[in-house]
Length: 74
Image (cartoon, rainbow, N blue to C red; front, side, top):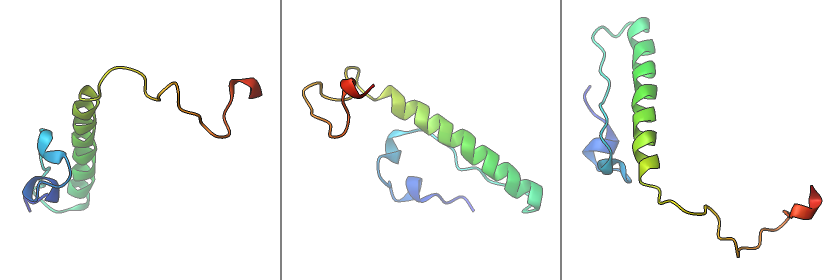
């Protein structure tokens, strides 16, 4: 069935990404296995696109105080 909530209902930010909805032809065990493999490949494509949108710079504000972590405890 060609239905994916991420595409149909514009779920979250998925409308920003290009990806395919994998469809099988036979419905047998091998077909279900291949669907999982293709879904993982499409997930990697989504992740690659999402990573490109992350702005450069520090991940954590250098002024932020993190509890339980210090450079002295090493």
